[in-house]
Length: 238
Image (cartoon, rainbow, N blue to C red; front, top):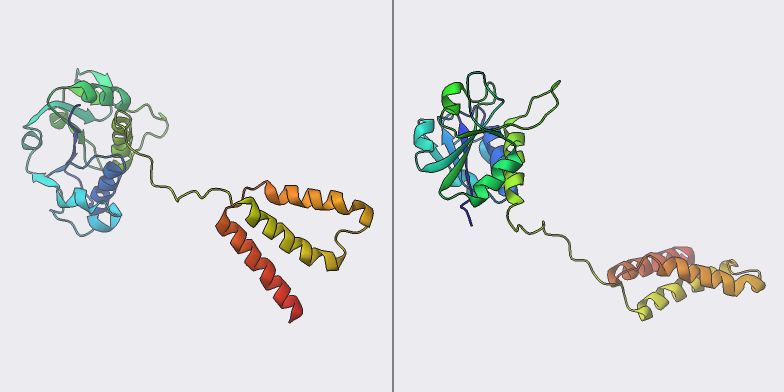
C-alpha cells in the first residue's frame, strides 16, 4: 500500500487557513503537513482554534524555506492550480491523482498555493502533474481548506476508513415494556371516555397499539414516555 501523501502549503498567509487545512486533512486520514515560508511565521496562534481538534497535524507540521526543500524526498508531486499558460504538464482530477498516488512507489506530495494568488509558475515547475477541479466557470473561487478537503477526500476513498462514530443504536424494547406503556396510557385515557362508545372499544385499543408499536421504541424511550405519563397524571391529581 502506498504511503499517504504530504500536504504542502506554499507560503500560506493566515493561521486560520492553516488550521482549517489541518482539520480537513485529519478528517480524511492525512497527517503530514509541510509549510513553505508561512507569511506570519510558525507556530501561529490562530491555527489551533481553527483546527478544531486536529492539533496532532499542527504539532507535527514541518517548516521549509523553499518548495524544493519541502519536496526533496518526494517522487510524485502534484500542483493544485488552474492550468497555466506555457506549462505543459498532465492535468488530472483529484480522483485521478488519488488513484495514481495509491499505486505509486515513493513519496507523493500535493502542493497548495497562497490564498491570494495560488501557486506561481516556479512552484508548478516542481510538479509532474497539475490537479484541477471541474468547477463553475462563473465562480471558480475555492479557499485553501476547500481545496485540501477535495483532494484528501478523494485519497481517503482509496483506503478503508471507518465511518464517523455514531451514537449507539439501542434495540427495540421487549414486548413486556411496550405493553406496560400501552397499559399505562390506556389507564389514563379510560376515565376520560376515550374508548367510548363501547362498541368501538376493541378497534380503538387495537389502533392505539398499532400506533405505539410502529416506532420500535427502545427501553430508554419507553422509560421516558412512562415518565411523561406519570408526570401528567400527577399534575392532574395536584
